[in-house]
Image (cartoon, rainbow, N blue to C red; front, side, top):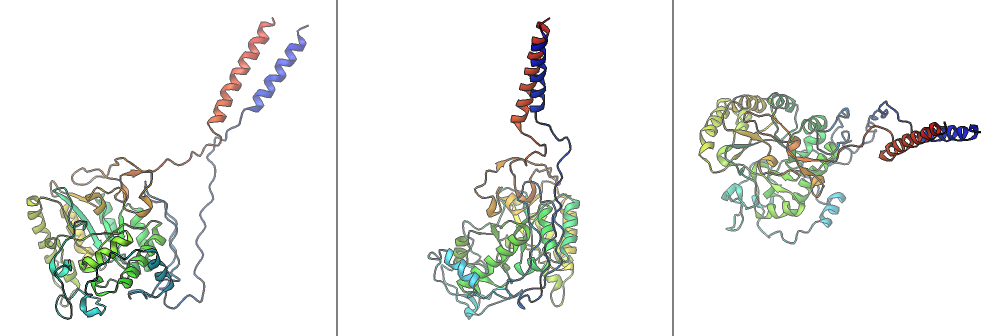
Amino acid sequence: MKIFPIVTIAFATFCVVNAVPQYDTKAPKTAAPKAPKAAGKGAPTKAAPAPPAPPVAAPAAGTPAAPPAPLTNGYPTTDKVPDPNDPQVLAWLKELDLSKVPNLPISNGGKINPDQANCNPPTVIQPDQGSWTCQKFTAPDDVATCPDVGTWGITFDDGPSTSTPKLLSKLAEHNLKATFFVVGSRAISNPKILKDAYDAGHNIAVHTWSHPALTSLSNEEIVAELKWTMKAIKDVIGVTPIYMRPPYGDTDNRVRAITRAIGLKTVLWLPEFDSNDWTLVSTPPKSIDVVLNSFNTWMQTFPKLNTGFIVLEHDLFPQTVDAATIVIDRAVKVPNLKIVTVPQCVGDSKPYFELVGSNATTTTTTTTTNTGSTYGNNGTTGSFASPVSNVKGSSSASTTSITAGSIIVVLFSSLLNLN
């Protein structure tokens, strides 16, 4: 009788079919991000008031995910040089090797200078001081120009401010990316604006905590200024910048050595490429023509240079941002001019500490400028591993499905052969 083989084959077929994994054709649901808890009462009086936490936004492509804006508890007083004896600063100092920092005079007689560095007494400038302010000395590892002719490293200092969003809109209108040198005190005061800039693909860099002339600070105070700013930026956007610009460009060989010990790269600018936009808010204020005339001079000068150039501009005041938007509208119409971030201008695809040593590979993503140049977001050309697929199951499940199908075919072929 053939009934027994038939029953056996049917039962085997049933078992195999039920052994095949079942796939969910719908994408799995992800839990909505929880809003960060609001700051409680009793926050330290020295901390800046915590602004409303911004919604969690998707990070720029090819960059590490950023967390929500942090609470400001535990930070130093805003716009003041942090206490070098703070336990956190002391912990940072223990981690650093400052043995290579030269014993050079502190400017301004050792008195903290919140303004442009003073080159006259009580400041003492030694021949080996390496002062950019007083000697216009540039170290080999200072970034003061872009290597390629016709490349503009566009930068904005002193933000983020309430005027920054207008600048971000203008940059987005022309699909441009810029480097923003951020003051730590303003990073924790305007975290959403800073995060919006980062998420839009702009490069974020360090510009100290309280904007003093760094050469007038002690070694420990310089460490505090830089490390608190690095922490503030990391807490807001999730990554730590590698690039740093000293306020007023005020650096020397002592400040440079400390900057190197921390792992930061110093960025300056060509003196003749200063926008002088700060004069728009001086007393008495200058006309916007000062900035526009400077721009016209740059456009006549840059084709004659052997390198590209980096320009100093600011996004702290409405007046400086208004001037910047006019300059941008005119710059995008200039032929043979590429407008990029500082990391892009020097060919650095990893402008954050978290990217250094990663397995990022070089790729090219399209960002349109007036020259048709291509660059990735946040000044990077690196790409990260693709995210895990949303489909349930695995490649082994697919193999099981194919194997099960093959068994069924064989079983039914055997059934037919019984006839």
